[in-house]
Length: 103
Image 1: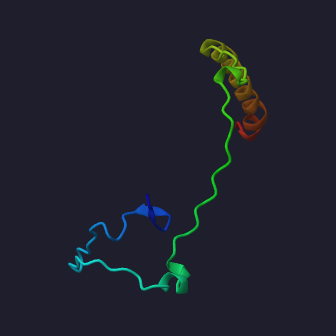
Image 2: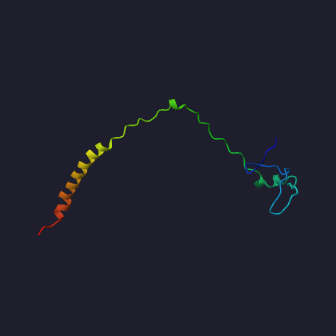
Image 3: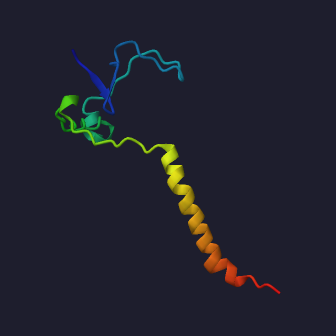
């Protein structure tokens, strides 16, 4: 079996009934003898090198990262609200209160 390539893509050979719908040409044409040797820019690009093979490992052999259970929402709220309140009070006490003048 003979496979024809155009820019590395398999195409049908010229004798398999190709036609040019734009020009309406239904006759077969070919390059003159030695034409492609004189015009290397028309030849197909070389085939790319195959990618490196990666060995497959079964899933049971993979080391999975240790996943902690997420902290519960109530614990985060119970710890976060007092910290935010304390930080807000300190901000007011040392930054905003001295700048406010009472007459």
